Amino acid sequence: MYMDQERPRPPAARWLQPNPVPFWGTRIFRWNLILCSLLLSIAAIWMLVIDPKMAEKARAEDLKNAAAMKYTPRDPASKEPREVRFDGMLDKVGDDVSPDVRNEPYRYLVKYLATVDPERLAKQAKDVDYKLLMEKPEEARGLTVRLNLMYWATPSGPVRLDPPVGGVETVTRAYFAPSSVAANQVYIIDFVVPIPAIERETYAVLDAVFLRRVSYERDVAGNRTEFHQAPLFLARTIAKVQEARTPGTFRFMPVAILMGVGLFGFLTVLTLKGWMAARSRGPVPRRIPD
Image (cartoon, rainbow, N blue to C red):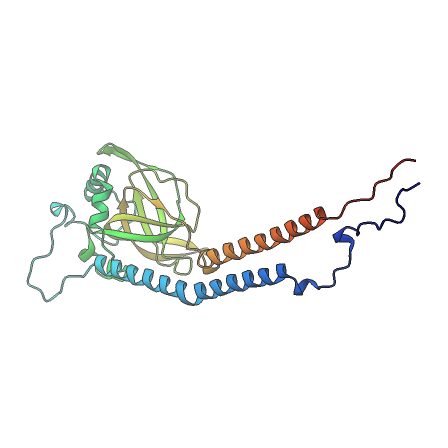
């Protein structure tokens, strides 16, 4: 038996009552609409204004640095003597020989690279065109060249030097190319320090000394061989760098993070709103014994 039957009961819980106002007309919907509009506006400003300016600034800086490192060949009509590099030890180097020739100039560079400071190489490095290396190797011989290339392959393990020179007992040969599209422009580089494990088609930056243009034969399909030429460098170390990322993976990453945070905040507010509405229900009628 219930007491006070004539007493009006408290209203049912708010979350059980029909809501006369649709969700799109509530305050929470309007606040979240404002928040989403703000996020989309920031994303549009970033993609259309800020990001292009940042890309243009970075490009201008790269062009400035490249121009400062660009090697200018000597004018053939100039009467000035040619620059002497490595005390003339490379003057007798011949081109179009096998890459496996490791004569006295080769050993001289191995000894030099085994003891030189990498920072000194970085200061001396120049940007040299592939065309100059192939057409006028005598002009670039002995230059320290800054190479930004794609690692392609290491055909074999370390090759022993007999006898060792400058404390170096082995050299490791690796093949590089500007990109997978320009794989016909091969760079042959011998390292005096064992190179770290590196995945194929990974871009790397290194400072290497140009020695000569070499000639070799390469097997192709159909049991045929082709004659190729390539520049041969000697280097000390290699710096592994990340593969160039596409715009979708890093240029608009802040925008994606911002949108994700906004969506998370939207869902959090809706969850808290429902939880608070469920806890705000009226008192439940109590049954009093007779």
